[in-house]
Image 1 (cartoon, rainbow, N blue to C red):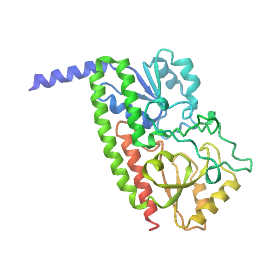
Image 2: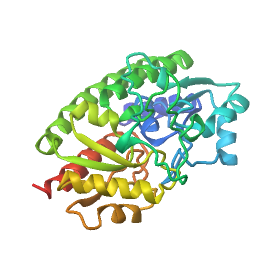
Image 3: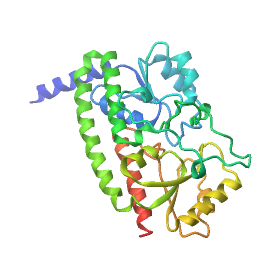
Image 4: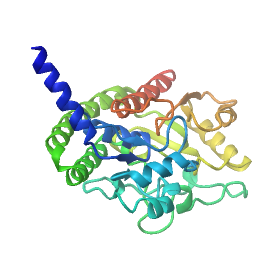
Amino acid sequence: MLPFATTLLVAGTAVADDAPDVVVSIKPIHSLVAAIMDGVGAPKLIVEGASSPHTYSLKPSNASALESAKVIFWVGPGMEAFLEKPLSALGNNAVIAELDKAPGLTKLRYREGGAFEADNDGDEPRATASDGHDHGGLDAFDTHLWLDPMNAKAMATEITTTLVAADPANALTYQSNQKTLDDKLDALDAEIAATVAPVKEKPFVVFHDAYQYFEHRYGVHVAGSITVSPETIPGAARVSEIHDKVSTLGATCVFAEPQFEPHLINVVIEGTEAKSGVLDPEAATLKEGPDLYFDLMHGIAASLKTCLSQNS
């Protein structure tokens, strides 16, 4: 038995040594890539820890990783605007997969007007393509695509296709891993639907409008966002508008995000019956790896259920 185990270990090491250098922009996408590469190699992550792609600045170590990469995965310029120029300059030796172009994706336009519109007091400029929230043009869409597990499946297919083309020696492993991932995503979808079902009619307000895909998939009721772009601080008029919106909704929840100013949530809910909670759409507080995507989605569902159940 020992020689067989030793043979497997040596074979596994050989495959890992031959693994292509793969670089991924953000944690949710990195998790999908890591799951598909399981047993072959580990992809490198650019936006680590609690950093946000909306405010990230490329580090020298990131630039070095991009230069040596064989495959690079990102959502696209609408999400990781900071990567657009570096990819042109540093990614010449790599296959670059822009996952917002994956076949089969559901794409939703950004919402504008009323509770999802920028304020007019001069403190919060209109979002542009350079800030990761392109609200203009016929092709503008919300780039938080991964918050629908069916979009995650579509991206997983594109990830597998790209890896197989770049590394055909490990094609069977990639394809087998994708099948396992698809099955897990289907199970996740059913679990989330069951978790939020008791509270999905209850309205809530989010820090920024990142949750359309989750809302569309599971029928939860996002009533508005505090800010259009998370990297800009809303002005007094905007905060007052959302405070009034929360008041008219009755008992509800207002959700902060880990990377951004939590005190704004307290201002918005002051004097109302609303509770506060935290949602983490970009997995800022989670450890990177193949399980992160599932922890992220379960976490959003659990946070919604916990906060909204307080108002039952």
